[in-house]
Amino acid sequence: MELVGERAQRGLLIATKADTEIKRVSWCRWKVRSQCEATRDRWYEVVKAGTGFRCNCPDAGKHPTEECKHSSAVRFSEGIREAVKRDFGKRANEANPLPSLPPCRSCGATEFIQKGVRRCLRGTVQRFKCKGCGRRFTVDDGFARLKCKPQVVAAVFDLHASGMHYRGIQRHMREHWHGADGNGVAVSLGTVKNWVHRVGGKLDGYYQEAVRRGEVRAGSAWHADEVEESGRKRAREIGKSRHKRRVWTWNWLDPTTKLWLCSALSTERDISAGRASVRKAVLSAGRRPRAVTTDGAFQYGEAIRKEIGSRSDPVTHFICPPIQKMRIDLHPGNNIAEALNSRQRDITGPFRGLVKGAGPTGFLESAQELMDGIRAYRNLIQPSLALNDGLTPAEAAGLTVPNIPGYNRLISIVAASHRNRESGARITLGPASEHGGDFRTKGPED
Image (tube, rainbow, N blue to C red; front, side, top):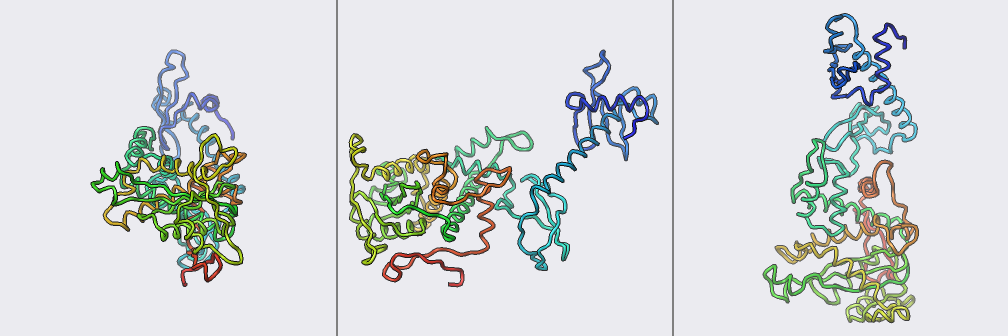
């Protein structure tokens, strides 16, 4: 760039110190500090006027046909800024090529180009253009139409999975998070609940899809135990007697990989509820166990025999009631399942609405969605202290968790789960007498 005149040279000198001498107020307005020692606290305003710039300094008033040093400094500063932006965009395109996009909904073409960006409450979203029909669109990464940044939604679910109730999450986001306007992120209780259910469903869907593809390899020895969610005190709070609206959680755990295989909820502590938990644990692990350790409750024996029992390949059932701490080194028993029950109750303790609802099925389905989301969060995202190198249980089981550059693990998994949603395949388990305890895949057409 050719420099002409003394003002341009002084403007270039100011542009080299743009961090302290130039303030970019908006895309068309800047403030430049006075270079005179007597008036260093004064800032002159430079605005964009057509293809040039206009300044309110005394020199610009005396020579309106010439560009003052403040306007020249802004011109050089913006030129450097645009050059850096172009170079960064070129390197980003070379390092991150266009993502694999689905065929165009209008013409079915598979060739696209980047066509600008869309600025909304979620931030800046890349837009694409179809080469076949010219249709422009954005890619849904699982957070579309939420009117908030994915990082905020991920933080809400992380707080929920850590045991914070809805009102606590609402207060935390208002006091400790700040939006684009500098104020706290104001979300309603209904919004928090919708975000929790949406993210939890996508996490659980991604895990189940990984099991269907055979990417999860759980151990062959499992532990199981049940825990009551609603006791006498909570039953009084919701206006029910102790023998009404009692909820049980049936937890299954793989001690080798620390996978939380099942967290089935039921209103009865009977054999049918135990059988349902066995089916769900087998689906979550992708295999039958060779050995199961329980505390000796009669429901487990019948459930294991009827669901995964086989004459040719029987399952060994160990009965080990909880033992004292001083004898753990001699025989660990079923204390690992008892510890899981304790951690699970620490999380669900603040959820007063877990056992509260209009009917025996409506509230149970909603509560089961919450439990499945928390279980998927523990398996996919939270590292286990009992595993080396900070691995998560899913990684210890052989699953490669996606990682999108610039985003955390939760956002990456939600985006990957949304891409897998188009397949619609699901896993079902028939009676053990039909398939010997093996699981099969059923599609939408079955």
